[in-house]
Image (cartoon, rainbow, N blue to C red; front, side):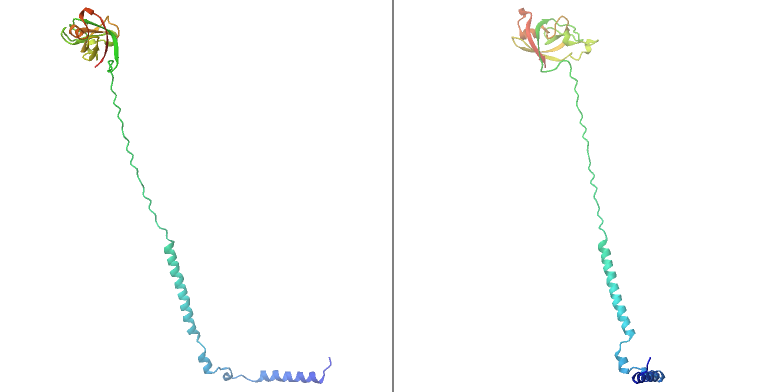
Length: 206
C-alpha cells in the first residue's frame, strides 16, 4: 500500500481530533439543562395521577356497565298457574221397575162368561153383586200358594158388544183358555145379556 501526501494528512487530522475529544473533561455545568427548560417539562408525578384517574374512570365505567348487564341478564321468574279441573262424576241411578205379568195398555181377546163367586184362589170371599172376575189359568200363572199371586186385586177393563165394565181379579178360572175372563153375574150384565151365556170380549189391564 502506497502512502500519498493527501492520505497521510487525512490520517493525522483524524487522529488529532479523536485524541482531543477523549482528553477534554466534561463538567456538570456542561450537562445541566437551563432552568426554564426544566420548568417547562411536566413532572412524571403530575402525569401519573391523571393516567390513574383516567384508568380508574374507564374501569369504573366498565364495572357499572357490567352491573347493568348483570341486572338485565337476570332471568324473569315465570310462575305457571296450575289449573286444577274439578271433575264431578254424575251418578245416574236407573230406576228399575219390575213389571208384573199384567201389563197395562196391551189388549187381549177371548170369551166372556159369568159365574157365582165365593172363596176364590186369592183367598177372598166375594158375592154375585160385586164387580169381580176370575182370570184364565194360563195368564193367572199361580205360584205354589195362589193367595200370593201378584195379580190378585188388580183391575181390568172388559169390553163387550153391550158396554164396558171394570172388574177386580179375585179368582182363577181353570177351564178357561188364554184371553178368557169369567165374570161375576153383575159384571157380565154390563157387557152382554145373560141368555147369551158366552160372548166375545176384549180386555186390558187398568
